[in-house]
Image (cartoon, rainbow, N blue to C red; front, side, top):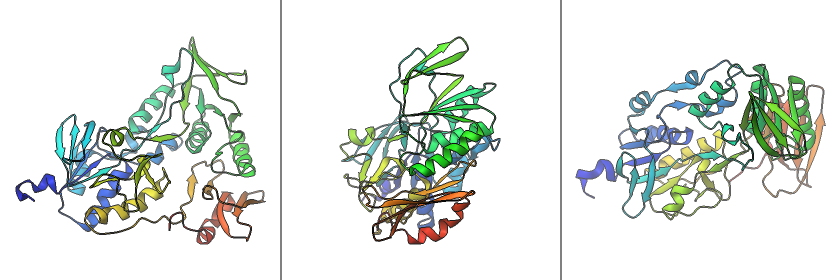
Length: 389
């Protein structure tokens, strides 16, 4: 290798300044203080906690207050170069370069921490362009501006983010309607009795549910929105927030000929199908798993950093329960693996609910803990099999 050009050729380039990108850099710096690292991001390059977006209203935090460190601070703290406000338009895996709106950059190793986009359902009506999604700090700032001085907010989606926003907004004294095609909240995570318990606590807090239906059209009528549902009812609202889930950002990888499935396909060392190109976080798919949560990112970053430095480390996932940030009824869930055979066993008390998903021979394969039962988390995690051994 030509040592003149070492800073670019042997350096590590990371695309994406979310939790995945920054966590990999922190792990790299624990192992190697000097290897050149360049972070390329279309965002301003600041660091903030994305999970806080759905709980910031009740804790009276503005978008600006969620920002913990700006790009300059991150660059000096981690001794990296940050190219912020830079869109990446292409990856050349043969030449090992990326094309950005701020020039062409060479890489020794490339990490795709591209994240995911909020899924936008195709809706009808004259107010479709008023649908808001919140997937980053700037969108959150826009959302806070939109609800300022307003009263009624409708959320499409009763999944994790929808439920967290619903709870946060009722705590902020807003009227909240939640619409979902599923017959219950957190359809992919909770057994029905657990969902019922969460729904009733959120109903008591002021959330109105519209299940087993979807939005037909969204129209602006003077100073309010009319949201017509497939079941014929009409919800009047001031602001419409869509939270129907995430889809990994795959376009850049696809255009470069990198193999993709539901996410960018990587092996247990986080390598894509292209030499010296890796992927991590919400955009990556490891052995069929796309896990858009904090704990899998931390695990993956710890495995990826040594691999980027030439060591051989294989990713494994322990059981990683998901905390649903709903103060109305705190909830922790570790869903059973797709296709796992077994049954839910439900134990309810006045203070909470414990749901165990057990195999026919009594092995614990998943759980949902609500209210006071969340104290069982530590004990139950020990019984669970790892997600990826």
